[in-house]
Each structure stands twice: as structure tokens, then as C-alpha cells.
Length: 388
Ligand SMILES: *Cc1c(COP(=O)(O)O)cnc(C)c1O
Image (cartoon, rainbow, N blue to C red; front, side):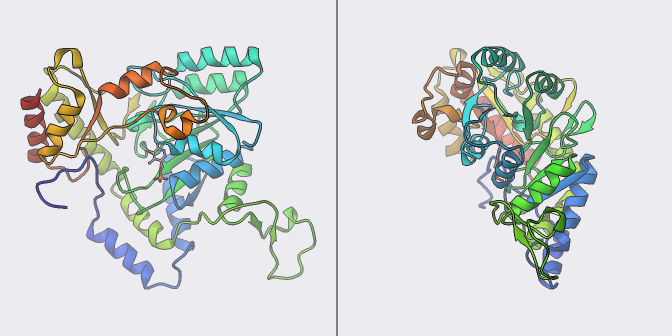
């Protein structure tokens, strides 16, 4: 990466991280082995969840979480339109039908009021969702107490897409403890909070879900005699009892992840520090800055601003391009999923989720990552002040 170009996000790899990977390369195991188990214990221990299942991406994690929740053809699932496409694709892989819940224009997370209204309507129409996937946008938790209350009333399973939120807290407790959900998913893609190159994880407190997730990760195969149709023929014996996948994480990736976990709080602390510096530097401009919920400590995966286009004599595109020309690789999170051509072909259209669409017309993601220096951040702030 050339020194003059500032991306919106990037990983930070230490000498210790490199050494951890080299140690695995010199060991007997490369694929899923002791390092994966160790990484799972570190993350589940950190979050306070009973079980963790590491896989090769958060997309795979979401897929097997949906399958473990027995989402299938004829079932309905809901998620936020303001997310990466994987939060919705995962349920489609299972043959289920997707719908969305519009966002809260303050937090950009799925709106609990819209969710409640939509559930009342769905109950009357006999179209209740089996699974709801709230996404902790930018690293700030959704209102999980309210969502869990609705989950109990309307009998749906909650899968938290916490791809942005490892290291974040909700009501003082770590995101990922699954206190208000059946399962929580993390992503370890390099732009996220910690990385394994590619990787993801499902956390749960349920032994049954854990057992099913482990099986789905590796071909639907079991070595547990109590689950087998026949008697074990010998120590070599295994049975495939359902259709699973090869979604395993390698020990190489897990060693990197475990090493990165030692700096998780440092990563999230730095991100919060830089977010506060953006707040201070941008407060007087015609922008909406990220809201902080009182009960939440955001992992700050993203620092998103909204342009008050009625008070700026430039279009969002002009602001975006002016920053990119100066080497600041601002980005946009997210194009509402329902407006993607694939989702339009399923019947969704512009206007279906107006709050997510209005947000998307004004949103811009500024560079934010552990290694962003304060002087580079000041250059972003100065450029934005000049452009606006
Ligand atoms: C990054 C991301 C994913 C997918 O993560 P991968 O590990 O790249 O598969 C899913 N959901 C959200 C909200 C994400 O940001």
C-alpha cells in the first residue's frame, strides 16, 4: 500500500502474529486441529459463550447457523437491508424466503418498531419468520433486549450478525455472549476488527446447536455412536447423517486469530479513540455523525457520516470523488440489499425500505483502522472541511 493512499480499513499484523503462523507451519497440523480448538476457546471465553465453532468465513458461519436453526424451504427469514449481502444470502442458501425490516434512522440498525409492526402484520397473515438476523451495524449492538422479547412472543430464532462487532459491548457485556440470541456470528475478514485472512465463527450457549454446527462444518459426518443409524464397525467408522460442507478453518488461520485476540481491546480502544477525534474534527460541519447508544460500546468497525446534501453545494458523488482523488479511499456501507439486481428479481423494489434508501443516498464511510495515524486522520478531516 503506497504511503499516500489511505484505505477505509485494513488489518494490523504484528511480529507475534507472524511468529504464531510460522509456528503452525512448522508443526504437524495445518488444517483444522489444536490451534482451531484453542482459538475457539479464547473467543468463547472472551465473550462468555459456552461454545464456539470456527469456520472459513462469516458467510459460511451464517449459512450453518441458519441450517442449525432448521431454516429451510417454505420458511421465512428477515434481516436488515443495511448490511452486506451475505446476511441475506445465507438464508437463501437454505431455500428459505427473505424479507427485510427497515432501519432506525438514528442507529442505522434494524428498527425495533418496524420489526414489531411487521410481526403483528405477519401474524395476521400467517407469514411469521422462523429466523431473524439483526446486524450490529458498524460495531454497535442492536437493541437485543427488545428483539429477544419479540422473539419470545412470536417464536422466532435470533442469529446475531456481529461481523462488525467483536470486542463491542452491550449493556456492559461482550457482544457474542448470546444472552439474547440463539447464535452470534463473527467475521475475521482483514477489514474487520481482528483477522484470520478469511474466517468466521458461530457462538452459542446451546449444546444441541453446537453439535449440529460442528457436524455441518465438516460434511455432516459424525463419530458419535449414539447418533449413528448402525453399529460402529470399528475405530475407523463414521457416518454421514446429513448434508454438510467443508467449511473448516485451518490451524494456520486460527493461530493468527488467537494471536490477534491478545490485542482485541487495544484494537477497539484505538478505533474508539479515532472515532472521538473524528467527532471533534467534524462536529461543526453539515454532517450527521455516528450516534452512540448509552447502553453500548461500539467496536467501531466503520465510521459513517451522513452528508446534509441540502446544505452542501456538492453532490455525494462529488464529495466522494474529491476525497478519493486525494488518496482517501472513502467507501459506502451499504447499498441496500433489496435494491441489488438479484434481489429485485425476487420482487423487491426501490421504495420498499425508505429509511435504508434515504440513509444510503447520504452515507459515506471514512478511513478507520488500528494503524491509522492521527496525522493521516487530520489530513482526512482537513480535506473534508475544504471540500464541504
Ligand atoms: C463482512 C460481513 C459478512 C461476511 O463476512 P465474510 O467473513 O467475508 O464471509 C457478513 N455480514 C456482514 C454484516 C459483514 O460485514
